[in-house]
Length: 456
Image 1 (tube, rainbow, N blue to C red):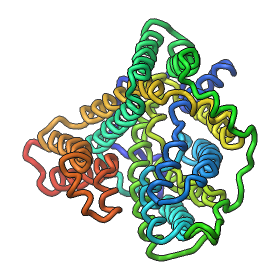
Image 2: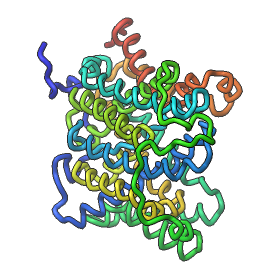
Image 3: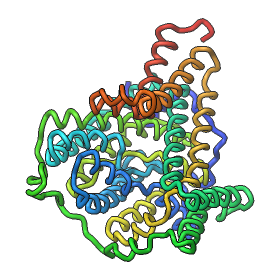
């Protein structure tokens, strides 16, 4: 059978109640609307500060690595997003540092050294590119019916909610929690009591009003960090070469063991991205096709490969942006391209980046919590669009239950057991979206293909 890039992943396209007001290939009518819509995307997808610090902690590297890596990640984030929205799957996808890959690479660095980690990033990016370009991923569509895809989308919503709650309670002092509550209420008022620009930009307006203006009045906005940040800084080619630090005396080393270990993170990222593509299509009212998967993964791999040369962590699709589309109805890839340019500016001007990073994270988390709920519900709607039978009920219930509760168990009652596992195994059982994809696909094969319940 000839390759058809427009072949739908699902036999019948699932529907959700979310209807975008600006479609994927449309543009806002006014330029200043575009700027505001793009700006609010960057406020929610603003996590290189978190992931760079997390990676350095996992890898046991000095804190001096963090600021350089943050700038590199923003530059890579901008280029990768432009590539994805222009040449890749051409959806409103934001690319950013991958938690799955950086977790794997943190373990690789701790064991094999920093130079070997960059070798693993380079080779892993190339392998991901060839996997996407080979079109093999588009052939697995029969194993991802709407009940599986919907379960993955719902799990993405749970992940988004967890991120939001983590940000809300990043500083549990009453003043910061009050700011979060005020931002949440203001966001709801703007969304439901107003129309047009105020409703569409409820994220941006709420965050700036409470996170910058309110925080400044109360003295909790970090203006000192903004003043200290340099105005302009160019990315460097292989910036991490320091003979005084173990593993940093050379730019890159290729180690088979490091490459294999790091590629486990890439596999997690690929599975997570497929779920993100499905969710983005669902909230954008776009048919999910094989080209979205193949071109998207190929572009992600190419972006990871190129970003590694300036010291950026590998990038993947960002769940947060799905929430922005779901809550605002702005599914335009053009708006996302403008946001990509802003990410580039953040990387080239640390002062601009710090203007956003200096506000209390709880404010952004409170507003993003609304978007997380919308993602979860859109996932449930996709599940319900499939056949209603016992087999699908078991598949959906098992998938969502496992993807939420296994990581929770590993972090609470099962923490002692999880600590005994190898680092990469521990990463797999704590990755909600990876578990949702694996459990969903396997349960669907077992229940709906092998066993075939009578009521199917």
